[in-house]
Length: 288
Ligand code: SF4
Image 1: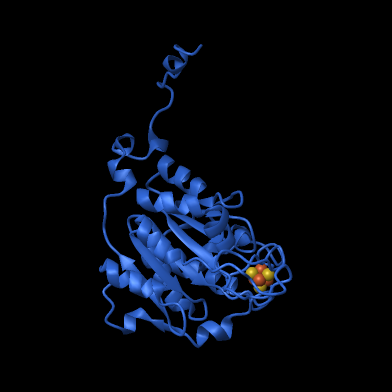
Image 2 (image 1 turned 180 degrees about the horizontal axis):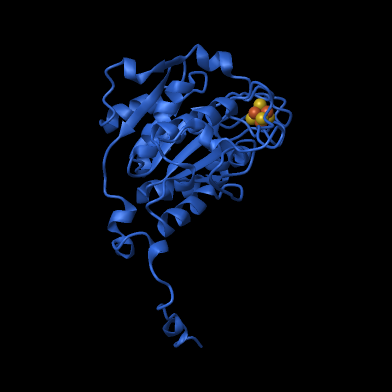
């Protein structure tokens, strides 16, 4: 039986404990992920995490499992590559809002329309934290940062309506103040077969402290009669992002996945295929 402590990195601080600012929402996400993996009984050698760049990108240093610390905005392509090589492995992306919804937005939309079986957990603090507080694609209009002293001019994107319209088959939102609820949403996203995304409202205490703001607004979808299989209702809930903000599973349906329809994967994970009998010479025969 897998336990949370199986995911602890051995050693002593500062090598095995995050260097995030005290009070950062990333701590709740860190604990919730370990809890979710233990609940699903996935041992550390049977999961891969792909991180982006930023405060959330350092996540992988403090979870004892396989980790790829990728380039900014490119965590989703890395995750898709791992999934195609070994589709028996759960693959989880940890990246921030700037990473996923800025540089990586195209990758998110194309992964969603493929319905490839990866889980994307977005640490959405509505700011670029590691680079000291520049507006990101989800920063609220009018937010005053050092580089926007008169207020951010652009309107924020709504990542979940984008993901829904692109074809994501699991869409959720969560808040790290309630770690058990966040962990439950994460576990459902990881267990889902298809593209899953959870937008996590992660307070950045140093540059955008939203603990109070979200605490006053969030409510749990489980405590309502929300039908998460209804696409129109899901769009409504994804758009509810003002005085009240729903958290939980917004949308979940079963649809054909990329790995089901890509014939090369029908025989099982590519990593288990023998490579000694593969002759790539023919590929070069007609080269000029
Ligand atoms: Fe967390 Fe913000 Fe500090 Fe980064 S800068 S560790 S996001 S509180």
